[in-house]
Length: 118
Image (cartoon, rainbow, N blue to C red):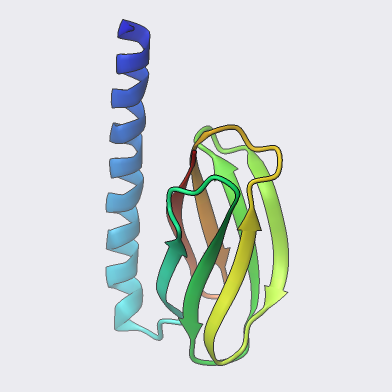
């Protein structure tokens, strides 16, 4: 029980640090041209599938990746966006329950957020 509690505290602390760093990066990027906006995973947490939705201002080549909390890449795909709303479906497949970090990478930025698999 104590080990589980310590693991939970560690994961919460780690995710707080990651998101605090991401917010700083977003603040810096907003001063220049922000390529990807309004990113949201819905539903989150999910058990079978979720959709990553975001807006772009132009056509871009992106790399969508999902990593576990220790940094192992569990999914990666290169995509082309369209102007306006874009949707990336993501299926759980053989992933264990837990917290994962998804990233969308363009030529000028990387935006990362978390998803939870039930």
